[in-house]
Image (cartoon, rainbow, N blue to C red; front, top):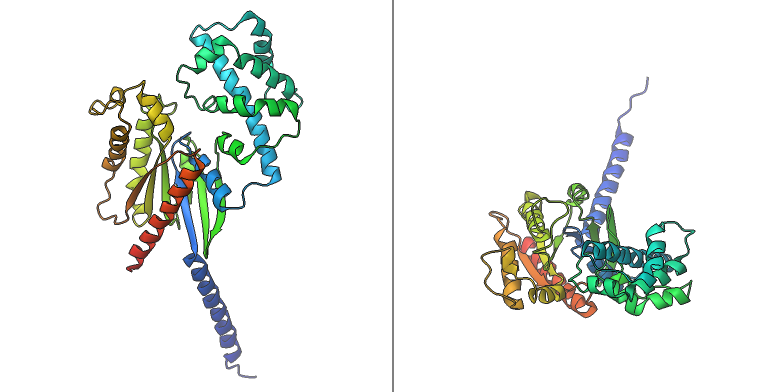
Length: 355
């Protein structure tokens, strides 16, 4: 009977060990140059608009297939926006002219998701209704519902093109204004110098927030997007609260989480254009009795910022918090802000490294 020394088995294990070490070395090298940023915020805060801006300015933009999908989204934005105004007009007892009742009836009866429906007919009905005095009067009543927020843009710049050309394709600006509710997890990648960036956008609805925890691991930074104009808008998901109060609650829950103890946190106070418009007609003091700045935009912004920062309790959590006012539909402003965000993140990486 022969005797086996086991040398061959040791050689195999040594080779396996070398392979594992090599794989780990490659993984560490990749991780060193990968920056993962999680985008959080409540529904309709502007998270997805910011991700689209970053894709257009730093990434490869949108493919022809994606633009075709956005064309469908634009149609739905127009249809649902006009339908919302019809319902709103009835609530406010604004009369729609008799001559426009046929257009109203055809839009209300249509299945907007039916691919066989005549979109041209529905678009012409929308154009007719948009010119109606009752609909216009309703729209002018500080219309902030997400379904109608950018309706003026579509009616002034896009609807005629949609009616005239079946093969119309949205521009970059159209894609920025197009609204689609985020469900699940959407990722956007781009290369900046030697670094690979990965932005992870997750849905902001209450049902979607349960999925956030699955995205926490390995994040370099978190951007929390808060709409600065929502202090008086009732929350659809948190009874008895405004949307800003709901956002503050979600922020408080996550910014103080141990999961983000070493994570760079960046707060975007978004929709600055709408903040200044609203201050002229709705006092921030209606929701926050301690506010005394009236219609002063700078004082209102500072107050809102402090509401978020006062909710932070990060004892033992050394990572910094950076705050940036933003307007997600403003291309140049988002480019400037995201440049500062990159600086914020690299500064935190140096701090964590002890450099």
